Structures are given as structure tokens and as C-alpha cells.
Length: 181
Image (tube, rainbow, N blue to C red; front, top):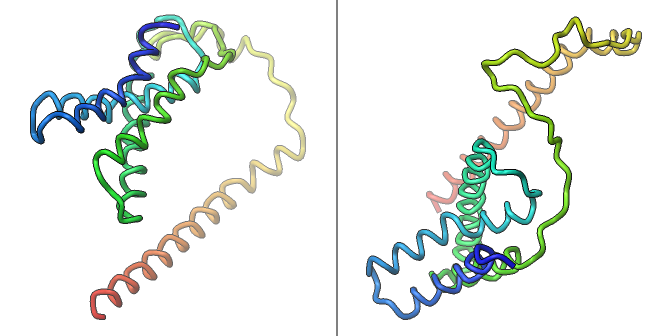
């Protein structure tokens, strides 16, 4: 097992120890806790959920951004659940995030396959042109579906907007009733 995986598995426990033993507003405590909350839970989840790739620069940046977003999402979800249950504390939040982070970091990485063909950069021409590709002849059912598709998609958008407007009105009415009572 790599030292990175061990470091990832122990990062939550280090943040929990920093919160437990270092004084409040102490810079190392803040740095360790913020680094854990911003990076480690998401990095453990992304490392486990995605197969390993070669060190392509775009994949590294993509993984870093995804890990940051997943970490922040998990942190918010855990904190919100603890707030709503009335049991929020920094220690409980770190404990609730340290356990799955350790488990995901110590689990063996899933084996998966990804299309290993090299993709063209956005400013480069594609490997094949449309003229070189062989297209099957269109079927009659597909032609009928494409004619009706714009009407159906506009209808779906309109019904979704109506549902959102209805929910917003109900939410506003409930909030107004709560502030009056």
C-alpha cells in the first residue's frame, strides 16, 4: 500500500487530533482542519470510484477539481445533518468525515476500463471527418421522433418551470406563515 493512501487514511484522524489537542484559532489547527475538509474526503472518494489513469495533465486537474467539489459537498452534507439533528460540533463533523475517508482510502482501487484512445485537443482537427464515417440510413421511426422532439422538449421545460414556480410559491407561503406566527 502506498504512503499516499496511508496519509489520506490518517488525515482525518490528524485533523481530529489537532482539534482535540490544539488551542482554538491556533494556525496549525486551522490549516490541518481546513486542508482535510477541503481535500481529503473527496480525494478518497474520487480515488476509489475512478480507475487509475496515466499521469496526463488534464486528468490530474480534473481529479483535483472533482475531489475539491466532492469534499466540500460531503462536508456541507455532514454539517447540515448534524445541525438539523441539533448535535453539531467540529469534533463530530470531523469524526463523521474521517471514518469514510479512512475506509475509502484503505479499500483497494476499483478496476475499471476507460477508453484509452487519445482525444484530440479542442483546437485540433478530429482524427476522422464526417465524410469518412459510415452512417446507417435513418429509420422511419427515428425521423418521426426528431420531428416531434422540439415540441416535446419545450413542453417538458414548460412543465418543469411550472413545477418549480409552484414549489417556490408554496415555500414562500410557508416562510411567510412561519414569520407571522
